[in-house]
Image 1: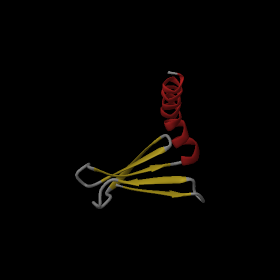
Image 2 (image 1 turned 135 degrees about the vertical axis):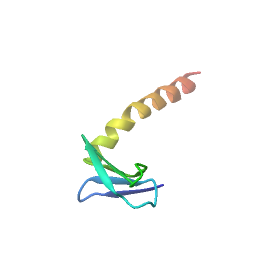
Image 3 (image 1 turned 135 degrees about the horizontal axis):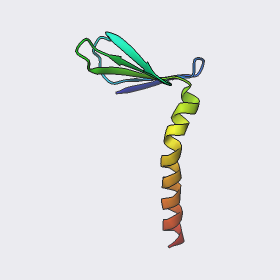
Image 4 (image 1 turned 30 degrees about the horizontal axis):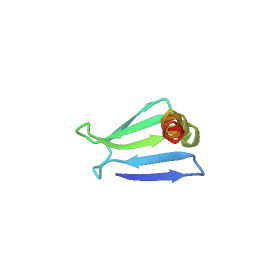
Length: 73
């Protein structure tokens, strides 16, 4: 799996497989690319600076709460 971020276009690309891309489908800020057999090959995240942060913020928030809880003990 490979990750790439282009700050000029604000797109993050996650390559899952080396297979040839046959088609893609867009759902909101995500473009899913599939092989001829329907296997996921690549994921593009549009407006990545905002989209990725909105995905990971709840995770980071929980992590911070757990860390503070451990420090208080």
